[in-house]
Each structure stands twice: as C-alpha cells, then as structure tokens.
Image (cartoon, rainbow, N blue to C red; front, side):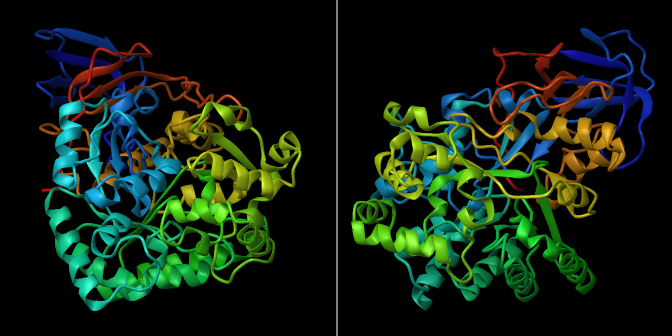
Length: 529
C-alpha cells in the first residue's frame, strides 16, 4: 500500500516550524517528504491545510494488562498516540516469579487492573514481550523494567533494606531484563515494595541502567511537602550512578506547597548545570490518578496486599491508620492532606457490589455508607481487595503552564484505563495542542509537536521514530490546529477528542476520517537495540 498525504503543513518533530508539503508512505516507512506528485499512489489523502506530524509518543502508560483485554487501545490512537511505554512506577507485569503471582496481582490491580482468564506464568520480560507480540496491539509498545518486580524476585515483598546478597541478585535480574529489550528502569518510591528501598539500593540498580545506557524513570518519594528533599535524593542518584534521570508525571502537589515551586525549578536548573541528564514527562491537568490504596500509611502495605487486607480488618490497626493520616508521617506523601477527602474521587472498583462508589468523593462515600469517610474508605479497600482507582485534585493551573514550557518536558497520559478513568486517558495530547498552544499560546505548535515526538524518542532511544524523515517508521498524525481539543470531563471522561482526522501506525491507517479502524492491529513490540 502506497499512500500520499498532500496539502498539509508538515511539522517534522525536530522543533522546526511547519512547511507546506506532503508525505509519502510505503511498506511501513516514510519514503518521501516535501513536494511530491500524486501519480503512482494507491491512496491519496487531502490534508487540507492540516498539520502532518510524527505519531505521538506516550512515555507514561498503564496499558500493560489492558492491551490483552482491548488490544486496539483506541483511546490512545484517537488522540494521536502511536507508541506507548509500559512498565511504569516500578510495579508492572514482569519479571514475576510464579510463587508471587497471587499477591502481586492484588498489588498491581489498582494501577493496571486484573484479568482471571490470563496465563500469569510468563515469569520474565522476554516471555511477557512475546505474549504482547502474539496478542497484537493498536500502538507500538515499549517496556521499562520495574524496580518492584526486580526487588520481589530477589527479596520478596517484605519491608526493610536489601542485604548485599540481595542487591547482587537484584543487579543480575535487572541486567537480564534490560537485555531482553527494556528501554529503561522504572521505580515508584510511594508504591510497595519499591518504597522500602534506600538510596543505596536505587543507586546501585541505576548503575546497571547507566551501563546499558537506558534512563531511570522515577515516581519520586514525594511530590508534596518534602519534594525538595526528594528531588535532591534523585539528583544525587543521577550524579553517583551516571544514569539519565527522567521524572514521571512531574508536578507539585498541594496548594499549600505552592511556595516551593520556584525552588523545584531551581533544582532542575542546578542539575542541568552540573551536567546531570534530567528530563520529565507531564500530563496537562491539575488532578492526578492512581490506586486509592496510596492514601494508607506505608506500614499498612508491609508484606503485600494480603497483609494489608488483614490490617484493614483489624480495628486497632484502623485507629492507627486514621491517626497517621490526620497527623502525617515525616517523608510520606499524604494524599488526604494535600487533596482533601472531598478532592479524592473513586474511579474504579473490582466488584459490582461497590459500583455505586464510582464518581463519588470520600466525603460522599461516607455519607452513602452512613460512616465516617475514612472508615467507609477502609471498608471499600477491604471489600475490593485494594483494587480501587482514584482521581485526586492537587495542583495549580499556573504550575501546569510553567512545566509545559520547560525544555526538559515531554507530554504523557499516565492513563489508567479501567472504570471511569481520568480524562487524560482520552485527551492529554489534544489538550496541549488545543488549550495550551492554540488558546493560551504557552508554546508554539512546532515546539509542542517536538515535545510529543522527537523529544521523548531521544530520551528513550527510539532510533527511527519521532521525526518525519525518509526511512523512518511511518507513524503519522494528521490534525487540525484550529479545532483540536480534548472533550472528556471528570464526570464523562470517555469522550474522543476533536480535530484528529488520521493516524497511521507503521504505515497502516489506525484512524481514518476521525474514526477508529478496528480491523487493524498495526502496532509492534519494540525492543531497545
């Protein structure tokens, strides 16, 4: 199939301004760009002055298990995403020793969901990637090796610092998994068991990533009260290990912490000046989304989800949880403190019994159940085996704009796909182009496209994507800058954006005339070379 996209404004992803021109595709590759005649093509698409850009790259995705349920990943394709990075936040699918399958499924469910009719016996990243290939996908898929899985294979799910013997095993596991094609090493230092790691453990593992020349992708220990100390730890890890540091979903949580924002930016500047490679991704909203279980103090998670559920069943443990949530624990990101009970909303549950909780904040949940809000929340987490998703409102619009304009930034969705999801699942990339480029003029369109394409490709080592160039993979988005916008709301998030007419993945039309092509699974599993 030989395709011509004509009469467009070609923005090639390098950061150069757009130029009128056309793009030719054949056999999954770009074969021409610029002024191209129409003869000899099987299909000619008139882009009518719309932008022709590289396919967007989502550097923070949670499609790890969802792709086996809904392989087309239509919410991503319809907003122009052609490549996604799985394995985020240090807890994902592989490696997964067979003896830990049951507790790990429960630990993972709040982020990536669960699936009963599924072969969980894959054990290694190599086998997981092979399963992805057999399954097929609408987008290209890349994998980050997650810290929590590596730690689990070496030490289990217990708290405490790793021994020298365990650290040696962790290094060997990480080295093995990166060699299977991993594009980086991820951690989430608010998620168990990653949160049990000390700086030494993370630094030694990052040295393995640095040797392999892959980035360290981190949900840092604090995005709130102690964010400065947290960033200093991450920067120190980068300095001591030599790894490229990439902050996940970078933000400052809690309006009461707004006075820290300038110091946060200063730390980014200082790291760059010192020669430490630093980047970050960002979703363009003032609310986040994760598993509801993060509102529980760290000690509640010790030993895995089964022990967490036992503690939720114990009245004395509940009293201690409540006390810690209201009084805080030094160094712990307390979501209730920075978002408030009325700023945390339930988005997903596992069973029909609690389906009525979806869309309710924790105050409303308490009113529905006739209980104090935290008690009602503890009940919900116990009844759902901790498989509950949430949205939390934490930030300021002015901070969103400032981070979009930073040179280190690229766009992501951080999209949790179950239940009533965060609207970013359907609209993060169009929101940047519609709201922050066209309407508010925070950055020009060619810079926004760079932040969605070649910028993340360069951070993660994608060699033939992210730029419109002859010989590169034919991942392409066609959009109308005058109409592109996200449409999803927190109440009704499952709405496709306006303004994207065509999306090609490896040269095949995944979206055509604004409609998903559900007969096509054109994505590939990519491996770091």
